[in-house]
Length: 529
Image 1 (cartoon, rainbow, N blue to C red):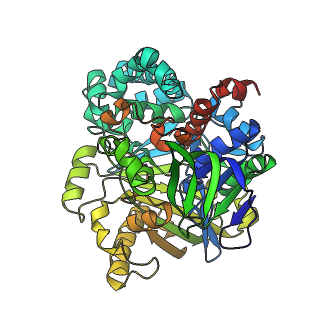
Image 2 (image 1 turned 120 degrees about the vertical axis):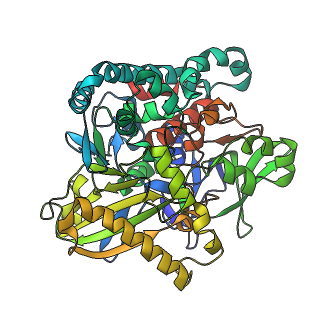
């Protein structure tokens, strides 16, 4: 049951688990715990549940904030599909995006990523006929990383003492790839920089260009979409709507507008949380899905933070990129406007991804290094039932937090004329990118709204308005502390920081966290249940 902390809510005196944040990691873990008979209280500071899976509405439109497409869920036997079915009792349905899921636009050239491994390879070979051997080797390498990742992530659920003995063997195969950059590995496969730029044309999904990102993150992302893209029928709000009843069946509840101020630790054990208004909730364990930076820097008592030297952990990792997101409402149905289901990834054609990022960071007036354009209303077969004669588009780009940092202490919707003027200038630049590809939409726009890094900070409570938690550099994957277990007894982590960014990473983090807590093979239950 979803209730508001600001209204007459009903909760129990004691819970088996308290979750900080209602992102997909927390929701997944709470639903799995519910299947184990455990009662959870999920506390969400935002006025809507779901973290980056939530929606918002304006002027008769709705937009999905963080769900743009998901791989590996339309085939019933995959781990992700089985896990989604497990935590929603099979109620969450998926729509296939079709043959083309991503269009990589580099300068005036367009490259289609098509579903099916063989189709993917054949299409790339059409574009780069001299690179057939390299393309085949690339796909083989992606699968090697995927296989090696299985034991790497399962090791995270092991008790720390067991991990000390056998953890190294489980991690090493994956770290062979994870500890190197995407560019390094790809340049061993091909020297064709145009091909490398195309192969890394989805880097915006994890936020770091090839010379900065871990190849393991790149490979995980690419493999995730080999079988195509999918979208939740009814929009991303259906994720929370279908998980909530499973949590509720065990007596759990989700409280929105419920801001946690501090984790309560007594004699080295987590025993509950204190809210911003001073109220306390108690539980046998506390699980944070709020991100490791927010959790340790803002919510952990100072004495505990110092005792366990948690600063040594958080100084070893960095925040991921911040972003701008333009939400557009259009007059006309997706069919009338001929909107594609495939996403556009738009890049300048003159230099590499890394060079594009470097010059943009130095001068924000330079071309955006990446522009992602999504057409969610075209992806959702239920859209026309809810919003007949209307359509939506999302456009996202990278944005250094520093550009908007001076407004971080102002109030949402009341940040001043200079802020609004800067937003409008960026909005127009993003619209220009859209109109170059879809010029017929120019006179169809009824409404648009731009969110900035300070918007993300306000709603998601990430320190620098980051979109992907921690950055996905090679260094990130070496750290053993990014796991469910913490030095504090009965206190655990979940969410994208302990796995990777993305829906799959957040979902799997919930499974890992419950596996660590219960010491059970939850994955086996999911796959056979």
